[in-house]
Amino acid sequence: MARPASSAPAARLAAAQPVQKKPAEPPRVEVVRAAMHTFSGRLPITGELKPIQEVTLKSRIGGVVVVLAYDEGDYVKKGALIARIEAQNQNAQFRGSQAAVSVAEAQLQRAQADLERLKRDLARVEQLNSQGAADQKTLDDTRSAVKLATVTVQSAAAQLDQSRASRDLARNAVGETRYVAPISGVISRRGVSLHEYVDTMKNRDIVTIVDNSAMELVASVAADLASGLTKGAKVEFQVKSNTVRTIEGEVSAVNPTVDPRTRTIRLRVRIPNPDGVLKGGMYATGYVTVGGERRAVGVPSQALRQEAALDTGDDSGEEADKQSVLWRVKNGRAEKLVVRSGLSDGDLVEIIDSVAEGDQIIISSPANLKSDIAVQVHEATLPTSTKEAAKDTEKDGAKAAEKDAAEAGKEAAAPQGKKKGAAPAKK
Image (cartoon, rainbow, N blue to C red; front, side, top):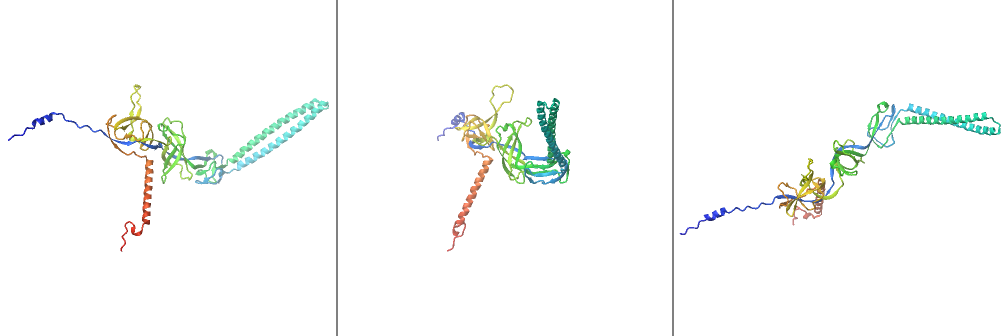
């Protein structure tokens, strides 16, 4: 019987040959498509609301409060009488000053009449002197009398001016006993009571009036984030009270200098308050729009990374500048890009250059990536901002409500025997 050929040489030959390694698979990366997005460039702000205008009337003259027409919480119009201090002494002084003015006016009129009479006498004496009927001494005496009468008129006029000034001061003193609203608003604080004596030395507060038709919020933002902050920028914020309210306003002023201690810039926000719901002292949090809204290419913030800039050979010892980089997939291969970023809106960041709409941007960790290597792509969905997500939710809810209403209308319009779930009619 023939013996089978041995397979040992073939096995030894196969073992001697090198093992063929399976080629490594390209790294798998997660990408999203760069897309156009409306960026609002919002900066967070917080602060306390204050009335747009607040005025405190203080005591200007001593006396007893005899009129107090308004209380705390009352609305007053500009020019309304709020309070009055007893003014007996001031009225007496005013009447006396008026009498002094009358006396001064009479003295001036008499002095002017005397001057006119002496001028006529002088003209007559000069004529007689030219005819030889009056001597030189009479002429000189008449001229001296005219000069003296002129000085008397000037003195009487000055006395009248002084009397009138005293009268005006006395009138002002009477006016200072009346406290009139300089603005329209609400009495927020009352510092005196009716029949109370007010001492001017203590500089007492009579009332405080606030104009709540608009409110003001003073806040600070980081200087390096406020380059696009301008007057008129939109502000949207919430006020913490019994119910949370979202209110819109605008920046009314931006401080042109940076606080050297905190490196911040102060800004003032004006908020309309026609219904008077907002109150001074409420705490508000919100966002201010920087540079206005604009459409631009956006990528997820997680795709951006900060790296040191390339070495320029500068041995000054200063810390190297940072640059923004991201990875893009082009023709199935990874590509590292240095980009300039702009505004941020939630999870998305504006890319100013190097990236176009539809580009595949890598959002997974690029630890094992190298430029120009092949990659496996797994495409994810671009995140939406909070504002856009809220709008989508509202649209979906509206569509669902419309669908439910349409189905309900169909059921109501269908015949009784054909309604869904109805038992078939018996023959």
